[in-house]
Image 1 (cartoon, rainbow, N blue to C red):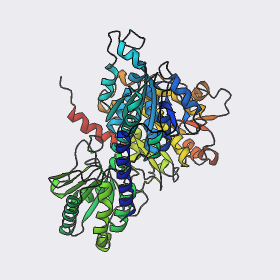
Image 2 (cartoon, rainbow, N blue to C red; image 1 turned 180 degrees about the vertical axis):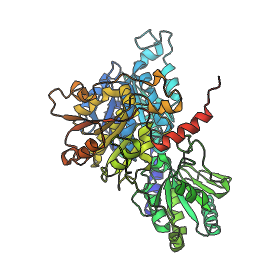
Image 3 (cartoon, one colour; image 1 turned 180 degrees about the horizontal axis):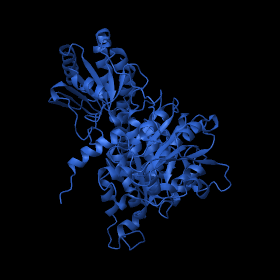
Image 4 (cartoon, rainbow, N blue to C red; image 1 turned 120 degrees about the horizontal axis):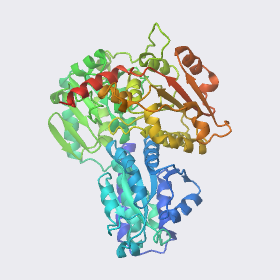
Length: 596
């Protein structure tokens, strides 16, 4: 029995123990506050930072948070940024979750865009809403933060649209069970969940007995006979393909914790491996059998040819959104595709619900490892970034991104804003153990600022490297306040602000010369002083106007060591954009064409 099988079996035993515990008559175990029970569970799941904004319906719980020995209250400038931060934290803190705490009504609605983004991109975030007491919820007085019409359930109904499960804690007898259920759903399905915590229940005492039984992030075991059939069918297709097989890795390989299993598969089989944009860094991009990013028709011609000509594609955790698939231009026939997902498998046109990739991949690797020698003969294009020779000293996207590839280090956490940054960095190989964050499906501009806060905190907790943010001037103006929180928590991200005078991605989609895509320019190098570094000891800011100035800064050891928080204003032409963004915008323009 493999280590994963043992872990899966133990997880099932623990689930059964929790179910039995829920049926037991109250025991004599130590009594704990419901608020502390929730915090104990979060601590068990590795949560060390909690995001949010104080409000009168969550202050009692916040006393417990602030007094907790291992969970740090971050405190954000607004709830939207807090939700973004919890999202970024969860993406870096794999196998864990992010937590955002808001107050009733006004706070939770402000957070909802961030929660929706986490749902869209499958990120486990728990949203805790401090709400009026259970008595007030029954009597429905016209309290502040209500709609004035007695509908106390309106916000919960709104949150239901963006969460995988929810719980309204109403009494002490079911509180522990409900907390455990919502947390398990969050980590198992990698989706946000929602919980209300009434003011009068925070300090109500319940048994601590269930805390002795750990919650598990492992999915239920696959049905053995069906799994065996699936394995045999995939093995047959590999044989029929004469080992001309490629592996295409995507976002859900990261979200559903199968990096280790994918690594074992590609190393033992030696199949060539590529990734979709949302799967970037799911596989070590310095690995010799890694060929780069496949984005349908946007792909580099050599990558496109290698992927689309393969006789069989093993697709792991695919998420075929428009920006993740080259505007749906994947040219991979279903007859040549096997799709592996968290809770189902598809072989050609046949679907197998309940057969998840976490347990399937190690067994598939054992079946296929003997193809090693034949698979190695398949050539894989080298994934490298060459800095082009350009006649002028203007910082172009064509030059900027390959030049930055020389600056990155192993274990860096790299965050790219929607638009020029997320497209520009696609063609740049990132170092071993680097972590890449981008919101390619939801695409809420400004997301990266809060996300960088969460990512930097998680990186510090995990002992990772530098946190580096790439963001446009227009995007930063949406959520700029959260730079304050980074300074407050002594974080030291490097922020590359691409100053191209407005919304470049929007210009390419529509209205290239329209004023609605312009923004008011700020004095960016004064920003960190205004937002908290009053005496100038916690940060440094720079403006680079040309290639020479940027290269000198990148080569500066003190700058590269990220000893303080740093902001670099990079002056770029208004209408310049990365190749991939230009092609994507052209494809999207045809799809969304406005007809006069």
